[in-house]
Length: 77
Image (tube, rainbow, N blue to C red; front, side, top):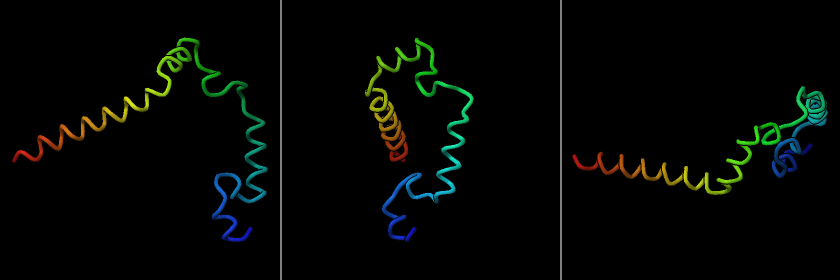
């Protein structure tokens, strides 16, 4: 694959044919049938559904608050 073509592709698309085959084989041999939230308990799935897209926003707000509070205390010298 030409260098320019490889730069335009991401993930497995940019990998060699041998690598793609190896990954596909390993995926088919996975010991579990359910992945991600499918494998989670019903309580976990409900909690994730309840949070929805808000969880990420809450996390960002906490980080911003921590940064602003630490910068406030650091600048008062």
